[in-house]
Image 1: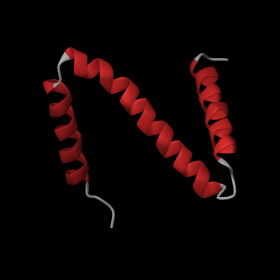
Image 2 (image 1 turned 90 degrees about the vertical axis):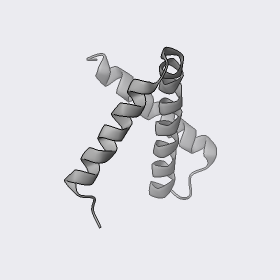
Image 3 (image 1 turned 30 degrees about the vertical axis):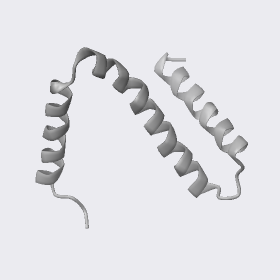
Image 4 (image 1 turned 135 degrees about the vertical axis):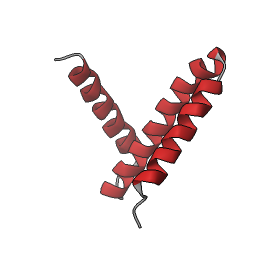
Length: 76
């Protein structure tokens, strides 16, 4: 079952309000936490695409994708 637009909007509003209540220190620390969480999501995706991949291979794929993202972000 897909979420409704109202549910999506409510979640978004909740997150915005939470972010507004954060101290500057909390906001500063949120960046690395978000990055770590997204890396874990990417690793999980790689594992589902290649269940036979070792941890070393998964980390290599992650590094390659992050490097590609950096290059694309810099207009290279």
